[in-house]
Image (tube, rainbow over all chains, first blue to last red; front, side):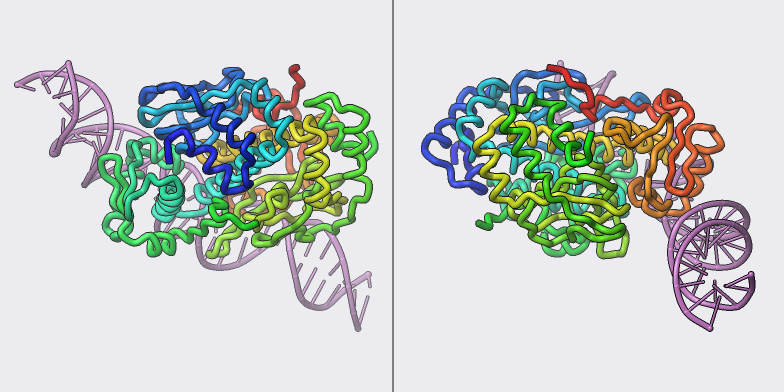
Amino acid sequence: MTQTAVFAQKLSSFVDLSEEERLTVSEWCAQPRRMPKHAHFIREGDCPDAVCIMISGWAYRYKDLSNGRRQIVGFLLPGDMCDPQAFILRAADHGIAMLSDATVASVPRTTMLEDVARLPRLAQALWWLSLVDTGILRAWLTNNGQRPSDRRAAHLFCELAMRAKMIGLAQGGSFELPVSQALLGEALSITAVHANRTLRTLRELGLVEFTHGTVVVPDIDRLAAFAEFDPGYLQLDRRD
Amino acid sequence: MTQTAVFAQKLSSFVDLSEEERLTVSEWCAQPRRMPKHAHFIREGDCPDAVCIMISGWAYRYKDLSNGRRQIVGFLLPGDMCDPQAFILRAADHGIAMLSDATVASVPRTTMLEDVARLPRLAQALWWLSLVDTGILRAWLTNNGQRPSDRRAAHLFCELAMRAKMIGLAQGGSFELPVSQALLGEALSITAVHANRTLRTLRELGLVEFTHGTVVVPDIDRLAAFAEFDPGYLQLDRRD
DNA sequence: CGTGGACTTGACTGCTATCAAATGATGTGG
DNA sequence: CCACATCATTTGATAGCAGTCAAGTCCACG
C-alpha cells in the first residue's frame, strides 16, 4: 500500500469505509509534513489546534518529571493518530518526539469536527482507534507494574513486533526499532544500565537480539510464552 | 444534583447540551442497576453488548496475570463511563469490580450508536471523556514507573481527592475511599506490606491519614507539592 | 585522529519483595 | 456474651532486584 493509505487501511480494519469516507480520510493525509529525527512535535503544555496522523517513521509519547526522570508512555507507528488532545482543545499532558525521520499529516481541529459530524461512522472508527490506544496503555501499566524486567522487555518487543508486522514494517522475525537503550529503559521504567543487562539476558536466552536499532526475534511464539503476551488488547483481528 | 444527573453534569463541563441531548443522556441513565460490593461487573474476555455509566458508588478496573499478580488500572467514580470496550464489540481486555454497593446504568451498544450518530456533539463529548481517561492512564504509568512509593501514593491520593471533590463526594479535606491496603498496593504496583509502610510514612509526615476507608488530607497543597501533582491531565476546568 | 555518544561491565547501595508472625477488627453461631 | 473464623493491618527479619556511581570500550563522525 502507498504510505498515505496506511491510515485508511487501519480504519478499514474496523469499519467498511464508504467512498466519501475514504476520500475524506485521504484528504486528511494528503499533505504530510516532514519531521526530522529527534524533532519535538509537541511539548507538554502546548495547545495544538490540529490532530495528527503518522504517515511514515517512528515517534514516541513522553512525560517529564521535575526530578529529571522521564516516562515514555507510548510508541507511534505509521497509521497511529498522534494528538487527540488537540481535538479537545486543551493543553497537551505529554510531549511527542520523533525517533526517526518521519512524515506526519495534520488535520485542523475544525476540519475534523466537521467531517466526523457529517460521517458518524468515521467518528466511530476514530473513537475505536483511541480505545485501542487506551488498551495499550493499560497493558503497559500492567506490564511495567507487575512483571520482572526481562519479561517486561520481552512483552514490549512482542507488542511492537505485532504492530510493526500489521503495517508491513517487519520482515520475517525482525524489524527496525530506532531507539537507544536509554529510551527503552524510559519506556520500561528501568534505568539505562539495567536495560542493558536486561537485553543481555534476553540475548543469552536466545529470545531477542537487539542491536543497532534492529530487533531480531528468532521465535516469536517462544518470546510470547516467556512474556505471557496475549495480543487481544491490540484488537488486530477484525471480528464483525 | 440528583444521582442520575452526574453523568449529564460531567458531559456539560465539555459541551453545552441541547435539550434533546440532555434528554437522551438522561434516558441512558434512567434505569440503573444495583450492584453489590465486590461484584464483578465484567471479567476479562467477556464480550458485553452495552456501555455502562457509574451512577453511584466506587469501582475499579483490573488486569490479572497468570502468576497471580494483578494490576489495578483505574478507579471509577460516579459519572465515569465504565466500558467502552463494548462499544467496539470486542472481548474486554480487563475486568471491572465494585468497591462498594453501587448503581450502574447500561446503554445497549445499538442505542448508543444510533444516538451518537444523530447527535454528533454527544459523540464529541463521549470521545472527550475517553481521552481524559487515557490521560489519567498516562499519569498512572508515569507515576508508578518513575516515582518512589511515598510520592506515588501521595499522587494517587491527590488525583482521587480532586475527582471526588468534583462530584461532591469530598467534605473538606476528607473523602471515602473503600479500598484495602492490598488493593491500594495493586494500584500502586507495590505489595500490600509495602503499601502499609508507605502509608505509615505519609501519616508520619502529616500528609495523609488513611484509615477504615477514609482518606483525610490536612493540607492538599502540601500533599500536591510533595507528589509533584499537576491536575492538568484531569481536564477539570472548562476552557471554551 | 580526536571527540562525543552509545554501549558494557563492575562494585556497591538501597528500595522493595518475600516470608513469618502477631495484633486488631468484624461477623457468626452457640 | 463468648468462642471461633476470617480478614485487614502492622511489624520484624532477610533476600534480591534494580539503582547509582564509576570506568572502560566501541563506534560514527567531523
